[in-house]
Structure formats: C-alpha cells, structure tokens
Length: 391
Image 1 (tube, one colour):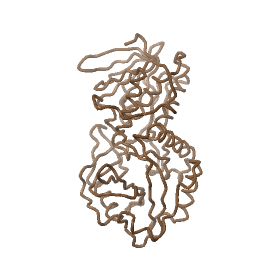
Image 2 (cartoon, rainbow, N blue to C red):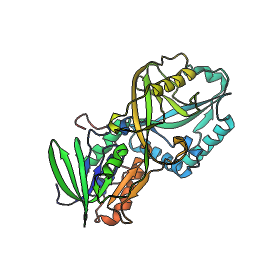
Image 3 (cartoon, rainbow, N blue to C red):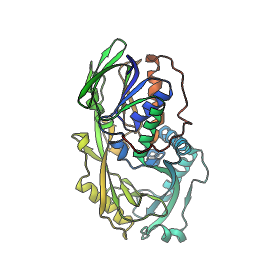
Image 4 (spheres, helix red, strand yellow):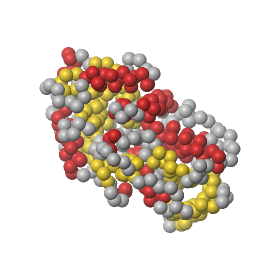
C-alpha cells in the first residue's frame, strides 16, 4: 500500500463502488473498504430499477428526473448485459387517486425530459384482457411506458470489478475502525482478518449508506452531521409470471405507488416505507409490510398466489424533515467537512444516479487531490458482469 493514498472509500454498495471506479479511472490511488461483501446492504435489496422516477414529477423534482433519465440511457448503452429496457403499465380505476388525464400529462413530460419519442401510449381496451390477468373491474385506462430493470447486486459488483481493473484496491470483510484528520488528509484505521492496518489518505469518502452516521461517529474531529431517518422498504417474491412487463400500481390502503414486476422466475412486489430504528444489519421484513404487499398483489392480480417465497428489506437514508417519506427530496446530499473538503459523506441517492454522484464527489474533492491523468470516461466505459468469485 502506498504511503499516501489519494482516496479511501468506506462502503461497498453502489455509491462506494461508483466512487472507487470513477477515482481509479481518473488515475487516483484508491482503496475501498467494505465490512461485509460488495452490495450486501441496500444495493442488493432495492426495487432493481434503473429509471427516471416518474413519481418525483409530482413533487416538482424536474432536475432529478431529467438527470436520472439521462443516466438510464447511459447505463442501457454501457451495460446491456446488466440493464435492460422494460415495459411498465399504469392501470387506472374509478377508485384510483390520479385521473387518466393527470397520468397522461405526467408521462408526456417524462417523455419530453427523456428526449425520446413514442415511449408511452394508451393501451386499447380490447387488449386489457391480455395484460397478465390484470383486474379489469372499474378499470378506466391503462398506460404503457418504458424504463429499465437491473440486477442491482450484479451491477454493483460489475462496477467494483471495473474499478479493480483500473487499479482500485477493493477490500471486503474490512471493517472501518476510525479516522483522524491530519494536516494533509486523514489517518484511517481498519481491520481485516483480526489485523489492524493504518493508512494515510488525502481524501475520505463515506459511502456507507445506512451506516453513514456510524462512520461519521468514528471520525475525529467530529465532522458536520445531519439528522437522518432510515426508511425500510420491503419486497416480496412470489410465484407467477408476468409476460407483458411490470405494473405501476397504487396500494389500496393508502394510494402509495407499488411496483409489481417480473423478476427471474417469479414476481417481485414492492416497496413499503416504514421508519426504521436499530442496527442497519438487522433490517428484516415486518409481517404488516408483507401483508400490505400481498393486498396490493391480490387487488390487481386476483388469480396469482400471494404466498411469499422470499422477502427482503433494504434501508433508504433520508434527511430528516416533516411530512410523508414519499414527498421528501430524493436528490443525493454531499456532506463535506470544509469548503475545500477532504471528507465527503454521501447521504441518500438513487441506484440509477450512482455514476453521476461519483463524478460530483470527485469534482468536490478536486482541490484536495493532485493532478492525475484520466485513463477513461465512465460515460462510455463498458460494464460487464463480474466473474463468480470473492466479493
């Protein structure tokens, strides 16, 4: 290990892997520390979507949606084996919270922001009976549009593998013990296999997701912090087949959006939003969350078996604020220790925007890093599934 690294990244989820890749591609000496295995946390427990975030238009998050749609197209181009275009359907009933004209207007804006044409349409009534057994009682309209789907764990590992190919040092089962600010950066301590290692780095990136607060608590002097909420999102995996694509539904109980999607050899339904308090490593689906998702599946596809074959829960990090979780901003927050930072914490963010987040982190750190010669550009760098092996 070099006497002075450029960047140490804490956390091997999608954002940590993305920063490690961007740093390595940028010619920097980078070390990534992951306490378990790559993508073991939220980055393997998401809705597995690469999308613009249609629901965020209602909150006026135009820039977030536009950027996410651009990143969707980038990922479709550079990772065709990992990210695939998927048809989505929005069924609207007499009891639906939104009217057909509202959804049509939202989809028109979504298409405009994506700079695409022909990406949504009204499904003719004569075709409704062909939509995977979708309930048609009181059905008023169905709209079809396109986003993309991915294997989130495979994508995370592919990005980390790319980082390693460009020279990043990826350490799994490596527990971050703490860091202390020095004149030229941070002294970092971590443990692997019972051995404690100390290294110096010019910059430190906290990409620990739900563990970000714990990481900040181990850094001296105490860096800036934000009040954060951990929000649990549960998915259930059930038997069945959806041949027409995915469905963007409203939960009967509270009109929250819930996706019902084809996934591998079954159906994935999610997600919930439940405030979580406790050890992030112990997050698990709650019985009431499972029942909530079963109700959604039963309401829209009454012929399907709603018995979960599997269920998982991931944690989102949101800046604490008043109001419903679904209405809080989803833009990533980069929390820095100074105007010319040597420490940046990535708070929140979406799977789709990992590459853009990484680029912004490096831009913020530029003043604290030496000039390096970039080796490639992540906008055009192909991503391929990593070979099986240690992760």
